[in-house]
Length: 355
Picture (cartoon, rainbow, N blue to C red):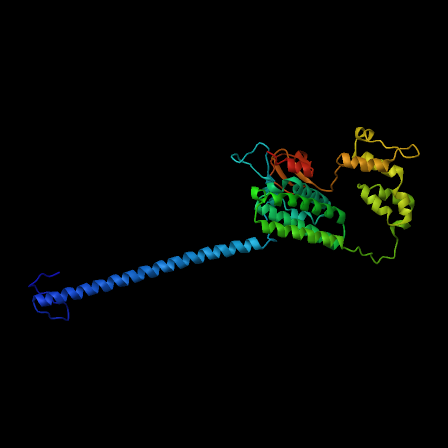
């Protein structure tokens, strides 16, 4: 900046070397500085507003994405591998730690219910989880649990098979939720209380649909079950593993009722499910002084668990500790992987995750 008395003319200007001219120069420079500062502040405020709006947009976008994910209760979480590594000695701090919820998400139960060999296995597993392990599942696993249950109900409504089995499953789940919802303040369930109340209402709706189902008689004019010889009818009835199915079959026709009361039929059913020691503890004599095997069966069912038998089960490889469905390829290093696999019952599957 030029001093007083120096030539401080700017391009296009011709100021006089006077104090008055110096004053006018300072006023001009001061105005320019103020103008530049104002312009800079305006730009700074504009940039901050843009940054704030951008952050708000990102937060809103993430919130919409999260809400969309939470609202889509039918969203499934699939994994490329259909097996999971499990080891009893693992912990959260050690390699191989796996929870029940993780295994439930990974083992593709949605596809398994479409296989008639695995259907009863999955239903029994859902029942065990509903009884005591529902709080062990993560939020995603609980959502998958309800999604799979919905698929099971829809399949039963369409096929009109296994109705009683699913009724019992829904009643077990509803009873458990009634207890858990009352303890919602103790963090036993993941999610909002309103969401679980809605799920309970959905379960009641499913139960009503199953109760209102009408079994349609197939339009078939050929050979029926009652047209078969008695020996074949008994042979088929002996393959029923649930006594309640025998009772239901006996209610279909008077001739079938006579066959369903056969003592040998109920004796074989008792011997199939229970040991000799258990049977000896629950002996019941009829009015004729003979063993009443039918009454003994239902008494034994109330005292002891029945034998479980499934067409297909989950298997655990004892060599590499990998859990998968039978026939699923997994990276096993054993020379003969099939010899290392052991079948797991639904209860064995639950016990596998009790560290």
